[in-house]
Image (tube, rainbow, N blue to C red; front, side):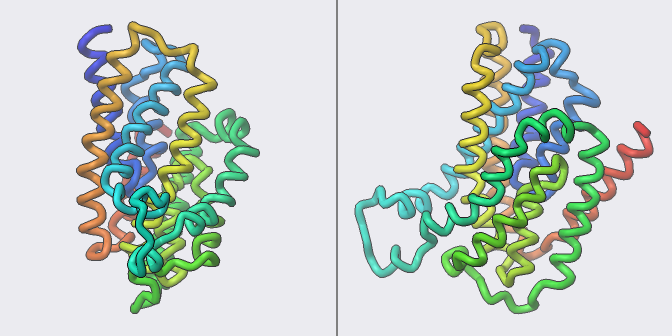
Length: 274
């Protein structure tokens, strides 16, 4: 494998890490950057290229686990403690309730989505419609959120956010864009909605990624291993930076700037390629 191929892996890892948890659609950016420019299919093959995208997504998931490690330790009861403080914290069952809707639909329609919705045109639609939803969330949100912390999220709110997350099954809509916007409309602060979004991302993304890896394990090869490793490490590093920066920023700038970015990107790509 040539140095240029490794450089492409690093670029794709950067795109994944920077966009996976920002409400701009990592899937949309990956399709745009890879399908329109890097063309990893040409030197990896279609199935190996798809497997690579799963591998670098695992790098981003690992970043979330590192940043929210104390949360996961508490929710899983691995610290061996049960105090008044932990009793009032976010529960694992609340996260599971939020995962159910998109998890069920994702399993039922996985093949249809992979076959029919992963294209440049569908991504552009997702980018614009998702942006409009984000703008609506910011315009009609409660000025004083009733849920300031992720620990205050109820089962009903978690399930409703989970229903809204189903929109993100359309490539380009953005899972974080859907769930953060949904949370804000339900009365959560932007930070609380973001924290819940990132925590929910780990089991659903890890499960989907590992299932995809099992199905495509045969497409791993010794020759492609440096490509996979470079992309994984790059995605992990940039996701760490991106998540920390985003969480400090989101309560200040809200969602509209991200929505404007999505519309501008969609418009540029439309005029260039259509």
